[in-house]
Image (cartoon, rainbow, N blue to C red):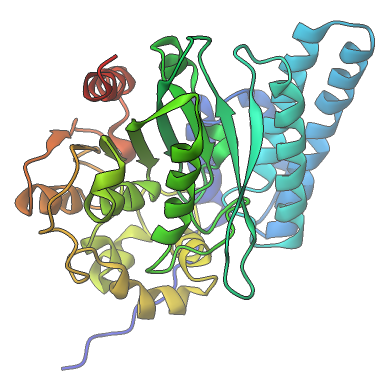
Length: 372
């Protein structure tokens, strides 16, 4: 008997709203206030992309104007705070990804305000552009945010990126900088300002980044750590195997491997903890496609099918929650079952395995591997 086709599930607005409010209540949307987020969601009546973006851009604008006024009077602390708030609401306007004109506009405003706030970071943030030899239709540069501790000489470096909805502006570097590690925050393949989509050969984007690291005289190319969060963990795990000679260690924080791409899981995950448009957002990042494209084409992304998992790999830490309903914990177990021994931290919570202990577990492991 032929398998039943997967039907695209459109999450009702009330259900998505409740999900977003719970995230806001828990502080998942950094620099926002629950009451402001709730007010916007109360005024909205659907998940239509451009009206969603417009509603959040409307509440972001006054914070941006306040920041500009504070800056004009020399109050840089207030300016930084309000630029970060503006960034955060513009970020919600492009959430979960930039797949409409309104969301794209809101994203560009979020970047603009984040970089204005970043002028006051200590240590400072440097926006870097790394030339990239893209194919026709691809971009010609990789944009990253580089921060370095004040330590003299060459220091280790962490390359960090998010997933399908967490961009380079969302990477937090302070804990690593305090331990003497430079951080280059990046966009995952297929999102933000990344020059290429995350199809099956996006490894080449990271090859260019590794070359950039190797050419610098202020970091140690022998002590390079990589960390991908959520969908970005897919690339961290893959690179730990396929580019093991270029990294000292890797962290797959909540990533996908194989089972995520099966029809059974795609069907199930539509009803899981992701707020809305999970398959569509994954498809946009990897394929620039539709829900139907994701169902049809995502199986080719399996690292098991690609023969990656039984290759030797760099030291690899796997982190996720055993109750994750976005990416199955079985994807982590599969990594443990194949190839070289790995480290794992799997608390009994949802996606990403986030607990009060989780950031420290990752930080200490990375520092141990880098010898700091």
